[in-house]
Structure formats: C-alpha cells, structure tokens
Image 1 (cartoon, rainbow, N blue to C red):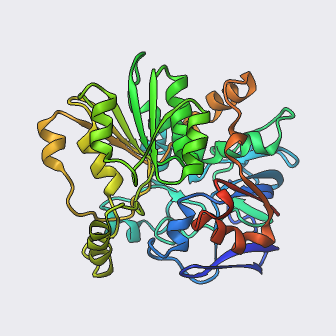
Image 2 (cartoon, rainbow, N blue to C red):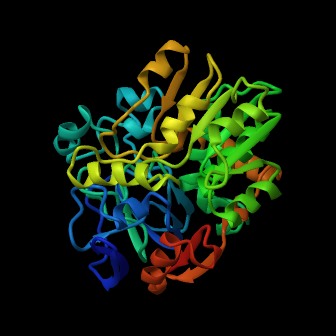
Image 3 (cartoon, rainbow, N blue to C red):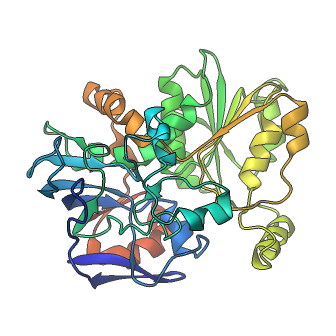
Length: 389
C-alpha cells in the first residue's frame, strides 16, 4: 500500500510499504477514505518530537471502512464506516474507566521511553513516535486499529467524510479546551492560536455560552476566519496582547485563556524568540512557551488557563508566581477523544456545528510532501489539508 512516511527533519515521502495485518484478536483493519494533516504533525515534521525513525508512517486523523476484524471484535463488522480517535485506549484500565482515554495504562508498548521524559506514560497514539507506541499512522491506504471495540465510532448515516473526519482529533480537542474553562454565560474567553484547533475551541466556547471570544494570532487569513465565526481578534505582531486584553476587559483580563498553540509558538520580538531558540538548540529547553506565558499573565485573577496546544518536554521561564499568587487554575491534556465522540456527532447531526468549515485544501495522498510544506509555511492561506488515499 501507499503511505506517507517520515524520512527525517522536514522530509516526508509517499512510499510503498507492507499492508497492515491483524496482530491481536482485538484489532481491525480500516481502508482509509479520508485523512488529514494536524498542526501537531508539524512538530514531527520539524523534528521536535524524539524517537521518530526513518520510514515511520505519519497521521493520527483518519476515517474509513472496516475491511477485516480480529476474532474478539464484537462491535464492528466488515463494511462499517468508522472514524478512529487518535489516542489508542484499551477501555478497561483505571484511566479508561474514568474516561481518561488519552492516558490509557495499557496501550503504549514503549511505556519505558515515555516514562524517562514524562515520569509516567500517556496512551499510545497513531503515527506519533516510538515513545508513544510506534503505531503506524493513518496517512496511508490502510491502518491497523488496536482495541477496535473501544475507539472507533460508526457513522451510520450519510454524513460526508468532511463533516465527521475531525471527530478523530481536532473537534473534540477544541471542545475539551473550552470545556476545561467552566464557561458561564457572559464569560470572555481568549484563545491563543486561530488555526483549526483554535477555531474549534472558539466555536465550542460560543456553544457553551461565552459572551465574547478573543482570538490571537499573527496570520491575517486566520484572523479573518475567526472574525467570520464571531470572534474579536488581536494580531500579536501589531499590538501588546496583555495591554490589549486589559483594555478589552475593563482591566480584569479574560475569564479563561486557552493555549491552542503549544511548543512551537512564535514571539514577535526577535531577541525573545532568539533566546528560546538558543536554549532549545543547546537542549536547555525543548519548547517555546510564549503563548502559555502570555495566557497565564493575561488571565483574570481566579481564572482558568486551559492548555490543549501540544508540548513535548521542558520549558523555561514558567510564570509560576503569577499562577500561584493570583489563584489561577491550569488544566491541560491530550484530548480524551472517545469521551466526546457520541455527543459531538449528535451536535453535527443537529446542525449545531459543521466542522468542514476549517478545510482549505483537498489533495491526494501522493501530494502529502507538498501539503506538509504548504501547511508549515502557511502558503496559499493553508488552514487545513484533507488527503484522499
């Protein structure tokens, strides 16, 4: 089959690779009909996530048709159309019992690698390094799906792929980012990052009752998308974000702040960006936490900082004093996608949200190398790429 493979920093290639096989009685094989490039795939592309190996198949946002099931799979049958969540979860450990699917205790066969960096291991993730399981990803013609009775959700009506594909990751991730803010009617929510996850976080905040959403980014086309969705916007290259947010909230700050940027944030001041780049190059930190620092400093006293942008390891100059002395609450996590599949599918069916609004480019799987470059460098107003195998 054809698959998009990581070949080194800033290099992916679509190659012929062996078809996946059933390895466990709880597995299913899915023929992929649609897959997407996530912003967090760029962290792999840029070489910031360790334990990648040449030839690893990328992709954790995908859906398709079940073509084979293991002998112990009872909920799926050949021919079922499914969306597959990016975290792989067993459904029976203590974490899964509490709905914490992205920290499943049984799905990462390489737990020891993750424990060295993080203390404990999270769940395995499709196409996201050997530290997180070494599972082949979904930017391919077929994928093996472990614990097939736990993760995939069947799509039994005629909803097109583009309306349900993002149940695999970014729609639930944006929703969880807003949910962690405990939004009440009248709240003001600030969202750092107006990419697809930030756009879904903003849309979710409105659905949960936020009165105002303020989206922060530097790309005019992204900010325009945010404005069309009803958000107010700030271009952080044109204004001082802390001052602007104070002015927009009568000096108090937003009630909650969502970091939908993560480890590769950009800072408008060259000297600050260079400082963090230098520390990253010398392995004194792994991530650029500008958005997180700004979110903490901007949030109103007693407010909530919600972190859904991906971080890989260690950061420098974390404003713990501000967090502690101002009674802020910080919540974070990879999305527990399985928890949100049914309720969000219901909202799509009801017409509350049509997730396809984030798509800017539709391309063939063979075009993946060009799509990665386009997405990374924000060419042609690239917002979200869907690939068709």
